[in-house]
Length: 225
Image 1 (cartoon, rainbow, N blue to C red):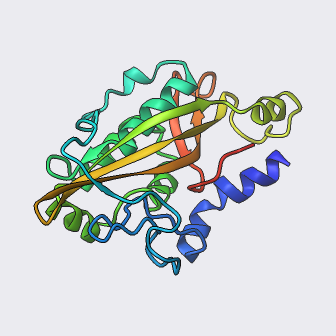
Image 2 (tube, rainbow, N blue to C red):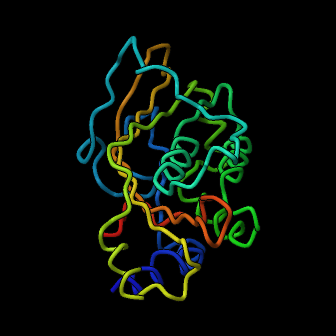
């Protein structure tokens, strides 16, 4: 069960993304208030909260720029929490798409073996360059409130029973569940909305590596149960 989940959600994620089978756009239509991902045929506002004008945006994202690799330590949950904060907290008026990507890589596999795969994973979570520039026009900011960050029991059982023996020792699956808050200025008015986010992050710790590092990101909207 776990092995099949891994094969589908981690090892083949690059193939899935390349084939267009998995499409997740964290960027929602701020200007139109459409909570559906790009390409969705559902009616606007039906499946998500309506953006509301507000003078407050919940504060600026707590951006962790120039992420220090040493801060990852030996705790896979803390590593996943930090990686999620870097990935989802950004401000288009001060950050660039490149700087966000660089900061994520700063807490990722130092051997570089998983870097190509992680970069492919990131395309499902970050705006493309053209859309980033569009969001910058609206002074768009994003922050995440993390509700749950934990190693699921299913993973612990899988490790104990040898179902993931082909992975490096010290590899963890960490489920991340929270809420994304997006805010910006549209036609001179502050606008904001919230949207749920969930994913599984794969983290490698001792003994494979000297401390915990992010390896890969699972398919958006899917966590290991």
